[in-house]
Amino acid sequence: MEELENCPIITAVKDEEGLKESIRSESSMVFILYGDVCSIPRIVKTVREAGKIAVVHLDLVQGLSPKEAALEYIRKATCADGIITTRPALIHRAKELGFFTVLRFFVIDSMAYENIQRQTASVKPDVIEILPGLMPKVIREIKRSIRRPVIAGGLISEKEDILAALDAGATAISTTNKKVWFM
Image (tube, rainbow, N blue to C red; front, side, top):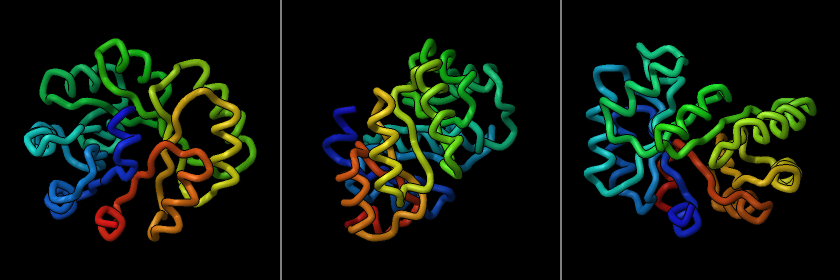
């Protein structure tokens, strides 16, 4: 959490080019949004050797099913610091394994608010990530209704987007937009 507060821009990488660029950024945390069972150990190693925190989006690693065995694999095959998932059932086991946990939500309608409150209270992730991140009013409401740090992600492309999300109560923002990484 201290890392997020010190450097609130999280690089989110979806390919090898993004990985190389993220290593050059000042961001201390990298969300890994790609890979497969063969490449994920190398990708995580690259991030960790650069002195950065590696957080793997478990749902996006090809060849892994969204089950607890995937968590065990990530723990044993990599030195990842954390995981991202849209599946609340995986958060509890991930925490037992010592991972920093990010529960990702897509806020698409008013029912999402209730869903976020219920699932966050139930599984207690370290942080939640909401997408899209361009909704200061929504960020404020979610921050007020839960007792977890919020990361705003998706569609953030300008400095004003970052400032609006942080001003609304987000602890950090995540983005694949390389231009934002170096702002």
